[in-house]
Image 1 (spheres, helix red, strand yellow):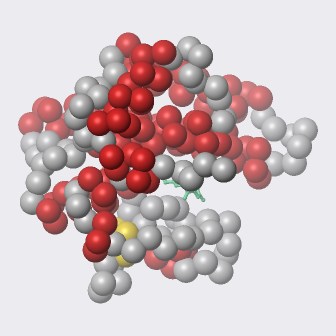
Image 2 (cartoon, protein in one colour; image 1 turned 90 degrees about the vertical axis):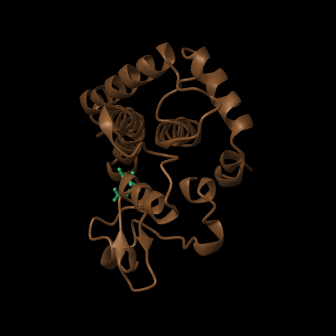
Length: 185
Ligand SMILES: N[C@@H](CCC(=O)N[C@@H](CS)C(=O)NCC(=O)O)C(=O)O
């Protein structure tokens, strides 16, 4: 989404990778085997998504997604970490189902992750970001809510009406959301 927002889509090719495939070149590019990973023409690999966003922003000479300096920069980065934490906890819940045999899931672990998601969602529900501004927070929150909708580690819509409205409003404001969302059907 950041690539799209910064007008760099024409310079970047999206290459699918399989994080579970030991033979996928992803593990040579990012030893952690995680996506996203930005590969430059000279072979330099840049990860994770926050670092990629900072790099792309510097490339375009803008401060559009992350403020350049001052307390505002660290407040925005902290909110972005809170949004990403929802995705990270959701991923760990999904992986619990994916990597363990049925019947061996740890309810304590799932509940631990659910707590992180619930607390972070409560903060955003009480103070959603402006829906008419695209930055690293609104991008991260859109990805987090999109991930919850996609993989469904928890149901979030019933208890977060302001976030439901925020996501609809932000998606209407920022065309990159529609262009980068998971295809349905
Ligand atoms: N904080 C990282 C999270 C990256 C991440 O966890 N990506 C998942 C996407 S499926 C992944 O690659 N998981 C594979 C794994 O953890 O082995 C970022 O924002 O780039």
